Image (cartoon, rainbow, N blue to C red; front, side, top):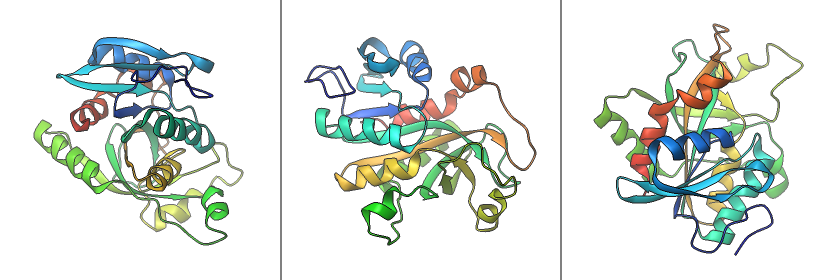
Length: 234
């Protein structure tokens, strides 16, 4: 049965959903990696597809940009369609000199400047972390494919265009590998409902070197993280 923001029927969505921020990246994954894929959602242009990867039934759906958008879709996928595994496949910006363009990061934990958990936990801190089961499977899949990955803490930020150009250096000092805008909320929502979540990220730009990839490159060429995520899918 359709939810407020997902126009799918019961049974249309697989137990594992890959969640890129960009709905066009969801379309790219469906068209290039899945067999017998069909589109189960077009509401608000947030494309969602279900198909098969190596015989495994998998879904992929955009989450939009930022934690409020992802929170809505993650909540509805879990509560409306009983999704068990949510795997973000997204881009991020490097904060460390040893993290290079196109490196892949498995987000062990997600720090944040977002206030959602401050509201949830009445001013106390909560540490959103990945599912160890999914993290270990992703790490092992990367090793088998010969794909180097970095594992560590990232920052989920509410600000893309901040006022202080040096603010990122505080996070760098404490070992944060990279910044993106969704993972802390993904891990929190999954934890709330007892589901598994993992973010697999490709470095698209660097605060250190100022290098950056194009929008088309982010949509169509960050395929190694997609392959890792699909191998993890159950």
